[in-house]
Every structure is written in structure tokens, then in C-alpha cells.
Image 1: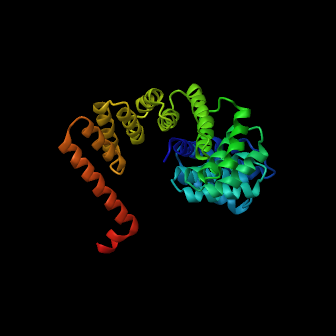
Image 2: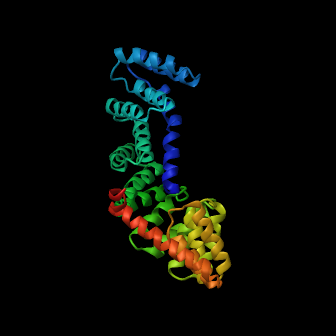
Image 3: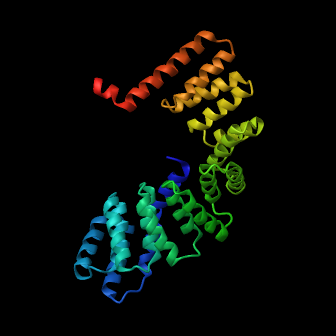
Length: 315
């Protein structure tokens, strides 16, 4: 899972804060609004069973009160019942289709759980209701991006940046979309923009460094990749690509260290074994290099058989 998807999941969990806004909503059914507020207070105090009883009783009398379903979504979130949370939010959007918060929280939940096709129309409804909300356009773009619909993602992310040029992760997402389309120069510019705005985010350094490495701009690549591993020391691809860069710069001992770190962090990163073998070979460690080349071949073959089902059929 990439950092920006993890960020979406965090935002989905943070939906609790937004959902709390249902308390101040004015409804014709004053009793339903009062029950929603009472249930919200019980949730705040940790009395989930009391909140559930209050909501169940109120929903029997007001089954179409969106305010009750918004608070029910908080309760289900607190109870760890995300499917029930989704159901409550779907009811809330059905019974109050002009409330943007319910669409936003439903979209965040879908995005956080990888339900990208479902998230797209939900975020479309949110941006329809709040067209000046930069985050909404970014999230819609992110949903498109996860469906590999890059041409649809780009205008939404650009809309987000037009509304908020310093919106965190927007330049990063735009860079991902551009690089997927093969527009590496445009992507590199976006990643550098993200670095300026969001200097603590390692993903932008990693992606920019990878592009520079592909174009054989080795000093620039090394600096960016070192920045990436400094910020995200537990991300295996950062160490792997830094190892590749160092190997090309004939810094074989340093490259060995990076490849070993990549393998320690991700045993499935088979190509790191090949890089490690190359770095050992460059240092004249022939026997160690031979073993790594052999291990790389064995892992590739094992992976090929597993993918084809041969290993499973044999076992």
C-alpha cells in the first residue's frame, strides 16, 4: 500500500470528527434531532450500548431521519463494524442527498478500503455539492488514479491545486498520474513541487529519484534517494533504488549495504538479490556473488512456479 493510499485510510478513520457535525443540523422532526444529539453524547462518554439503544428506539419512530444514521455511522465506526458504518452512511445520503458531509465520509471509507469504483460517484456527489472544496477534488482524482483512469484523474487534481496550490499530496498524486502516462518531465516537476510544499514526505523524493535514475542523472538521483531513505528508512524500494544508483556510481560497498537493507525489509524483493550479487562481484567477492546469483535464480523460478500453480498442484 502506497503512502498516499495509507493517507486516505487515515482520512477515512478521521471521518469521525466530520460526522460529529450532525448534532447541529436542524430537522423538522425535533425529537429525532434530540435523539441524535443524545446518542452522540453517549458515544462521547463511551456508553456505546446506551447510544445503540437510543438510536434503535428513535429509528423505529423516524426511520428516514438522516441525522440518526449519521450518528449511527459513528457508533458503528467505534464498534469496528465498517460494513454497518457504510450502510448507515448510505442511508444518510439517501435521506438527505444535499448533505455533503455524509458523501465525504462515505467516500473516505470506500477509498480507505480500496473500493475505488464505488468511491468515484460518491466523491462526484460531494464535489457537486461543494465545488470549491479542494480536498474533494483531490479525493475524486485519487479514486480515479487507483482505477488507472489517469486521464480522468488529472483534471480533478488540477482543480484541487487551482483551489489550493499548497494542498498536501496533490502534486505527488499529479506526478504519479503524469508518470503513469509516460510524462516523466511533467511528473518530475510535480514531485519537486511536492518536496517544496511537503518536505517531510519521503514518497516524493523516492519517485523523483527513481525518474532521475532512469535518465542516468546519478548525482541528482543519489541525493533524492538518500533523502527518501532518511525519511522512510523502512521502505524497501528506497534502499533498492539507492543501491542501484550507488552501484552505477561504482560505490559497490555502499550499494551492498543498501541491497541488504532492502532484502531485510522485504524478502519478496527478489531483484534486490541480483543487485546484491552485482555489488559483491564488483568488490571481488566472487563466491558470495555466486551464491547470490544462484539464490536470485532459485527465487525467480520458485516465484514463476507459484504464479503458474505448478507448486500448488505438486504439493
